[in-house]
Length: 318
Ligand code: NDP
Image 1 (cartoon, protein in one colour):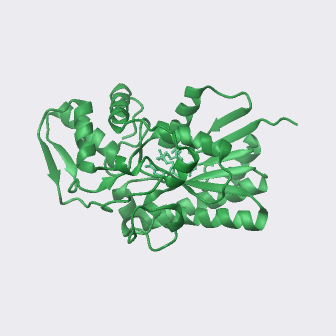
Image 2 (image 1 turned 60 degrees about the vertical axis):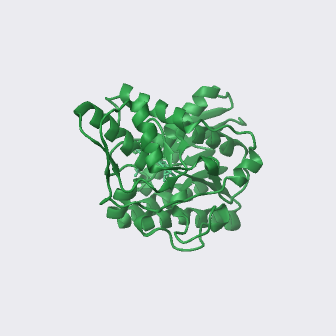
């Protein structure tokens, strides 16, 4: 029997999927691994039959489950119910079909925004279910938390190794640069490019004071490869850069302005909401496993992302 791993990446066409692909291409494809990056065009994972057909076709031994309706603060505020219902359905279809097809390991992707709103810092993996999440994204957060519940259940009831990672704010090429639906950093990049082209002021939404622990999609991709190959626990693990690397949105905006070469007026629109003021998470568990992992410096990663945005007008999502 072949010992080749057949790895199915759901949500493979998105920001994180492309980060994993880039990490894999950088280190060179291994002969004992066969990768399949799929999108909603290959299967609508909201639909049970479509999910079954995908698994029957690919016959994965391993699954990295990224597919989800993902959005920033503004999309979450507007569509909490839809996001809860759709993501819960996708997650249930993927996990139960993986179980049915005897998949050896599933790694799903949770997010640091699912942690309790009222909490102590730094946040760690033991605190996922400690209290209600921030109200702005309760639908997204509760559907993500239920993946952890399912992973535990599949392990206890069926002995499955279904696990999850908790990623902090990701950015990089192939992000969603739509200001209403996307996350803060791609929104800043989009507006900086538009302001430079139009000669209009660059607007920072909100006060600029909330702090975020950004992670470059390529770094997250490198960590996903390690998790998929080496991580044995069912319990989640936080994949975030070190706490000291947390920066304010204003600081992130300054790095974007520099990378884009925008020289005009910068203003703040404080009528826009801020979201949680911070979500500082501890990556101590990750550091115990990988003490020497080197994250790309944020300035370099933002510059790379801006260069990618500028060079790819035809495929940028916005
Ligand atoms: P993207 O929005 O960039 O990509 C979403 C992916 O999901 C796309 O490949 C999309 O396919 C696929 N998808 C959406 N709906 C369906 C569906 N019904 N059936 C099949 N596929 C579907 O998201 P990200 O790459 O940013 O996020 C990936 C994962 O990482 C998500 O689970 C997210 O919650 C998590 N995460 C993201 C963070 C971030 O900052 N971006 C932070 C922490 C966690 P298509 O291209 O065809 O639409």
